[in-house]
Image (cartoon, rainbow, N blue to C red; front, side):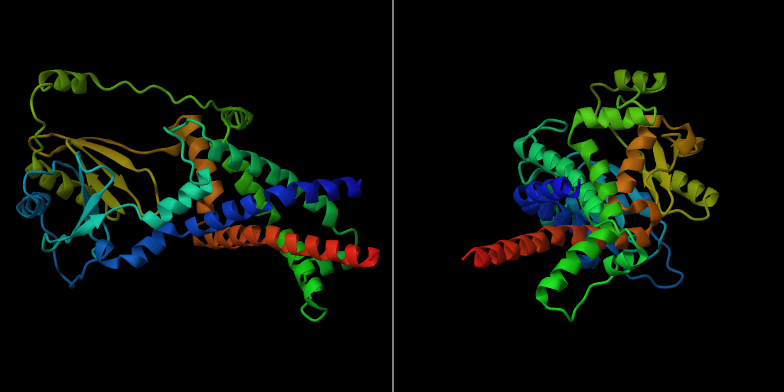
Length: 374
């Protein structure tokens, strides 16, 4: 039986090993994308703060931005940071995904926050081998190759477990150690087996969750396994919003920034701590530090008085939304905070090295057999 698994492990690893290395190493790079991006451009994310300093009001911030940018950019939202040392971010309807970083104490523009081109390339390499689909959800050759390789990676990992599963306590001790005194071949062999033994479970979690982005059939089956559907529930807009759209269909949208002042002040009184408060036309989202979702507050567009606060409750969310968040968390290591992210980084990095050590061992064995035959 082990001979069969040995052949499966070898002859799947040889043609797909390099692609596995690319997927794993790029995945390891993306684990700390946010931290590395901020470290590379600290002036866009942090500001100088003096004890007792108070930030400007949203309307004052907007007025100073307008003086510096003119009327070419149409403001859609303002993200207020709870940390006094963090910059505020302004979004525009006609600026794509870009945001403008602003000093909340002076109203000075720090610069544009854009997607880092390096990490954008790494992500395209990780997900599609640089062959991105024409549109979201569509297929491409690169996406298919990554999906098939990830699927085969699961088989390779399982076959590796079968091959090197320790039968005795002494064998287990050998599996957990890397010998550095018995020559290069033994060192690389121990590295391949022992390091693989340590990270296999994490690589399997990454691979099994990553496949949900590669194949629709797999995603449907994965969701169904937990009693969820991949179809997103339709959300109908409130009637008053439809009426407002009809009434103002031909009118340019105007935001009342004085209402933002009142809404922000009231929300800051209600929430002692928060990560960010994002103000838009007549609503605001309050997100706590380290969270992706938060409470949504509605306010009067003229006075800024809070009319309703919808508390975010994960238990009330559709099962499909829960699954989406769970899969992302498990795939990226977000579920356990910084510790699991470090473990995922090391696991993905080692996962990228394993095929290379495997190639080394395979070539060495071929050379040995060749010498014996000669």
